[in-house]
Length: 127
Image (cartoon, rainbow, N blue to C red; front, side):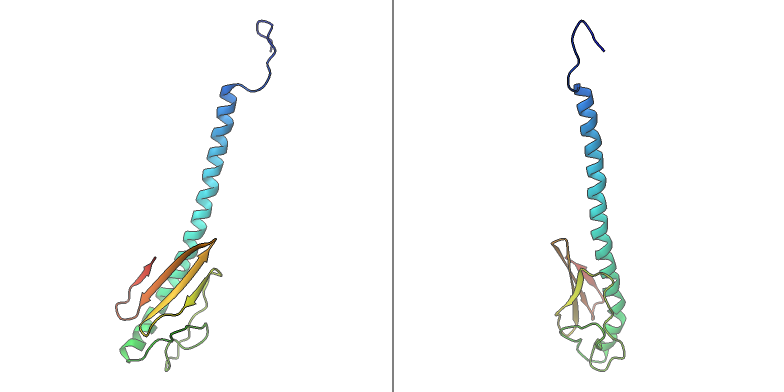
């Protein structure tokens, strides 16, 4: 459209602001999805850690030590019929613990999360 003999060239300020707002909304949706994926993986690893708790407490009550370097499929403690379960998350693995604790280390997109559980107190802490 021609107003007062001027040719319209380029974009108006309103059009530029509208495009920037749309890009901002799309970026927010993408970043929220990435955070949700990480949180879901950590919650899955925490669920696995808590599923070990009753068996680890049983070992503790019997006076047996947990395996210091847990391996999937190996007994939780020397005389246990229960084995360390497989992790449901490929980014998480068992890490060396102590006689009464077990540790799960998650490396999700370069962000390290450590889950430490204690057989005596029954608590799991995410750090």
